[in-house]
Length: 333
Image (cartoon, rainbow, N blue to C red; front, top):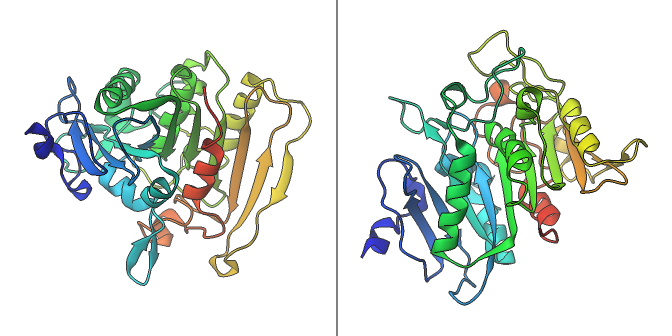
């Protein structure tokens, strides 16, 4: 059966010509090819309560540039005693939603290096990310096709489809909020802001709830904007987080009053980070920024996937998986 061919262990990833999956009937991990998109696909995790007679919420997860779906799944996991714990899939199992880890466009000749066309490339703003952006890959069409394919594989609760992205994937989540607001109930971006709006504009058909999580010590996508220090291109900028949030506040018709501010509990004082939450008032849709003071280009409470000297530190004062699902779960189209 073709289902057996695509019921691969998630760790194997989705690269290559993996065939599309047949409609899914049992819980577990699957890797599926995308019809019409050569060398692209997605991995998904169906929770233990999965059955063919019920509709399930979906969290679409977008990896960063120079990464892939398998690595992204790992980034969401903490490390305790050498074992991975607290992954996004664990939250999905407890809460009963489906996680989908999509694959961006592969870079020729480099295994496991993929990226999304998150916009940019004009007016001094960096093309995010690399070849996918410079080549004009139509990742809006890819996402539409992916959502349709998920609907073929199982019963999707279409009013509760969400997207969460990291870095390049976070910027892509913002672009989806601009251009596919009719398909997503809310988005969350970690370490990546709304680059597309700076170049091509952003006119969503409906106000989309936005959660931004970003470290003040991020050396790759600087909180204040600018070139960053983690990637090869020089002389081009990333949009600053404040500018990105101001743009969303304008689109959401938020109050001119300053955002409400609060400090989240300092769960792990030893990690040298602190979380400041800003919530805009009077908006047509929720708009929240979690600024990780001292945090790096990382997924809070996730994997320290590169040395602190390269990407900054992981904060353990919040768990990004828990915060993102808490923001998503009660929101619907």
